[in-house]
Length: 302
Image 1 (cartoon, one colour):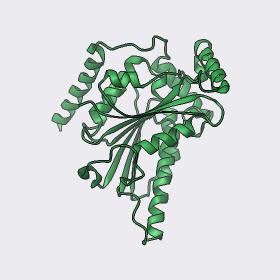
Image 2 (cartoon, rainbow, N blue to C red):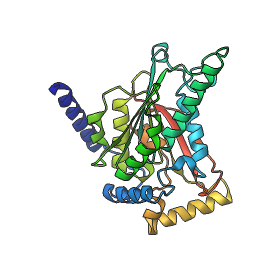
Image 3 (cartoon, rainbow, N blue to C red):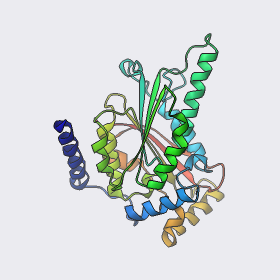
Image 4 (tube, one colour):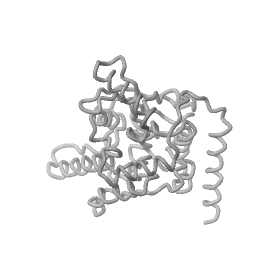
């Protein structure tokens, strides 16, 4: 048992060193909330049932999450998929393994698991139809640095505890340091690494650490990272122009009001680390707040 723990510690140190020594290229010089400040903000959001941590329900989050899940191809390997199909070896696995980094209040997991449950029920009711899901089980692991968000997510997802086809765990990252998560996630043990509206509140150093963590835990053959975050909407419509301008002003004068999140482009960070971009989409909001989102799918570096 000592050998694996030693290996995990070595991997954690490696990610620390890589993020520090890899001549980290800077794309955004703006100041961000500290880890402790971000924890305080999101603890408050969870306590007051604020929209923060429930981006799936927001005007900008809904369309982005729809696009992200279409890219993720969590359950099906049929013609509905637009990205590269999984290899036969991976498609034959009985479990889809998902790591949700910055899981918030668990709304994304709830959405996915409700859909999964509905698909299983549909297939059981009509045996004449081919089974839509090629995966028999789904393992969903959420990680967040906010104790209150973790508590809210666990409560939200408790109704899935008795489902034989799902396995859920929500873990607290006490330090807030993405590198420390490596100690609890085995190498190449994840099929999909998902992070929605999380990187846009992290420092660039921590953003790179999240990408390095994802590379470490993802299956090198068929693993996929899926990211969503707010981006600039100055050229899309008058409404998104005004919302983007207001958001950027609030980020300067009242950063906590916007959850510490800032508009950004995620692709440059992925390319800097050698990730292979599969798809990039800009999604338009359907309600307030009228922010444009960027959704990205990529394979681990070779």
